[in-house]
Amino acid sequence: MNDLIRLTDFKQSEIFEIFKLADRLREGELGTALKGKSAVMFFPNTSIRTRVTFEKGIYLLGGQPILFPTETLDKKESLEDVCGYLNNWADVVIVRHRDIKLIEEMAKYSAVPVINAMTDENHPCEMLADMYSLSKRRSDFTKDKYLFCGRRGNIGLAWKEASQAMGFDFSQCCPSGYEMDGVKVYYDIDEAVRGKDIICTDSLPSAILADFENYRITSRVMDKANDGALLNPCPPFFRGEEVSDEVIASKYFVGYDFKKYLLEIQQAVILYCLMK
Image (cartoon, rainbow, N blue to C red):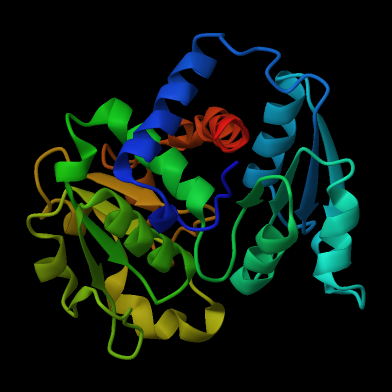
């Protein structure tokens, strides 16, 4: 049994095993692999993509998703007791919660796999899906150079974590005061994109939009990146804020179908964690 809390808990070879499982799922194999199994899920009402793909993915493999709001875990009952009872009925537990320590504590007391569906520190399923999509478009995505343009937040930290797990070159571009620790930082966007292959962004809180006015990704900025460079904005993205409207219509945008493998990747994560 494996948990998925952080990508850095996995070897690169293990991540590629998850990708191979996703390949098999796309080919129609493993169609009833979750028959008779129940997945207990804790999600906020605001989740769209991750929740839809987990629920549908479990259903398509013959499993039963059982959904609770995230705040269920913030009640007085101890997590040890919650997990103790869930161990009687759940086959896997999937949690989206701001506090990664809460998910780590659940993993400690759970006799079944616990999967992190996003915290304030990372988003491992999203990163796996993005890297899997890149593996279908790039000759070797681990040899590409990645730039995250944005503040220190869970998506930037998630890309940092992915780079540590897979060994690819990763840097950040942002104004002073928004840096991640342990990452090469650029303060000039034109300098930052030169020599880069994959440009990533995240949405920005309204309170700091003015600080990032000169860090918006446009087609002019993307023109300075390597030939064949791709723009991968984390949804929900906002035109006219972290990305321009015209760059989303350009050849650089990875496209909406870039996220379509999120379903198979999350199916693969569940199966991998159950198999190990």
